[in-house]
Image (cartoon, rainbow, N blue to C red; front, top):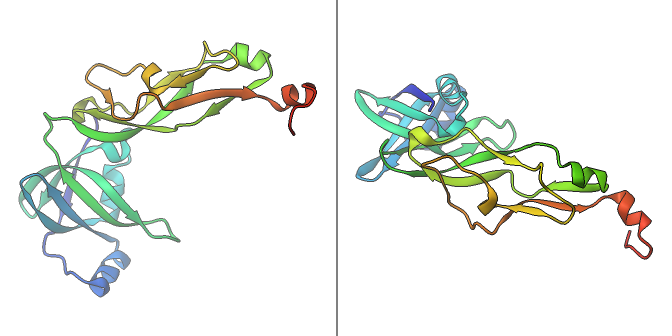
Length: 196
């Protein structure tokens, strides 16, 4: 589990003009919130924030946030970006209990070779690229592998088919398709009367 330390200032000004000045100076406004915590406006250095979430866990990194001497264990949950530049404009830090489960999104990676699908000139169609899971912060995987080796034409893989590590639970409808198969262009054109 990735863990990082980040410093925050709690005396930031509120309002659009001060916030614009902060962003220009490389400072990201944010808020700390969570169970039993009064929402606390904070400001963090943009470069330090990027460094904190640049590990394997990305935004699922557990962060020790030092807010002017008060320490919070947080995760970066809601990130707002500038519509043109793509830079982080605001970040919500959720206070979490390291011993309790949190729900996060992690990426899905296809592994293996669907030989039967390929030989039949069918195609693999990945329907879901991320999955919501619930796990303790120290048990959140960086990603989940989806093995497509056993797929045959017409088959699909659902969330219920994904193997998750111990302590991790899929937090979405288990009937949702992750991967499906479909006839390729060559198969469609070779079938009389097949729609273009």
